[in-house]
Length: 457
Image (tube, rainbow, N blue to C red):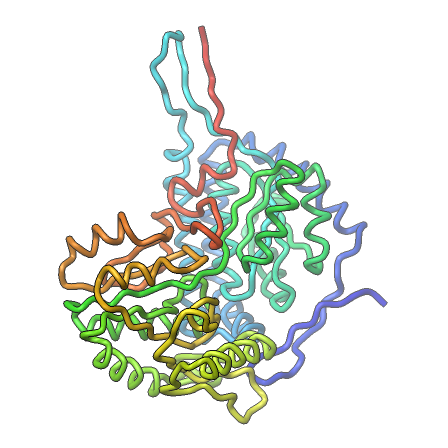
């Protein structure tokens, strides 16, 4: 009997479907097709590539109800957030269809040559290893610039969203895209190294845990292949003493509960200056207590279940260990008595270095409040992390906060008076253990190209 991947509805704990793992013969067929398609796709003019991207965007919108319901069933995404995710995918495809030719145009450089310029040429087949938390967005934000640049892509998605992975491939096919432009492989993570070793894979992009990123980087490095890694994060939100507390609370709650708290760029550590800590703590806890959680298909549910029971249990263990080490529980912190992988909005305060809530990524609806003596101490605490994906600063003094965000906060995306989020117009990625390389914007489309010098004497 062939090996299978199993999808389980995290809201009910019941099995949805099983999928046969693709065997070596299927993998070989997929790789051969990618090479064939690349040789044709890379020669198409930008206008033709743009037309394909726009058609995919139309098909995504046409299939939005099915896509949203599938994501809700497979990983528990609340339906309203699912619609937002699908629309963001479509807009990003349209963005690169419109701007891609400009981003990839030759850049003339004056030298002593008759003509000299920089040309951006595609690399080949890019392997995308993607996570479950944004099953559509993670893929399309990588795919849109990559294929607009003339590459093709193979997707190895998270095993618990195999239905979403196949739906992505189907949507692209139904949009009339060239066969092999984006192909899905249903394989376990153990096969990733074998794929990276294959000479027909030119580069790799991964969104996932720091542990997974380290393994992929090792394999890519052994093969001298370009890799972009978007890894974990423990984003600090610094609440300065002059912060507008209404703004701070709204940003903190929205930033912490986005995607049921399962986002690499969710607000996770709230570093609050001592003079305003009690007010922030009280109001933040009040709002976290009333945030509704339940059936992700119910539009009233702000929070759905976590994607898997083991992930919920791991989060609860981190909370319990932090409490045992001296953190104070203000709300939540228990496993509900139902079959789903639910975890209530939870707030910990008195969080100190050495606790999981301080040192580790809490991938779920748990906020950790850390008191700082003053602004300088807040910046020290914010940067006291192995991660560097995103971060926020809340202050009425926008000029001062901007300077801190630009020059002091150690992260790839630093937001002032707003929660961190990705935008197709801006580069996205991290530093330190949050990875390297960039997605989105003009920088993202230049990651998987040969930045070639052409010199004509």
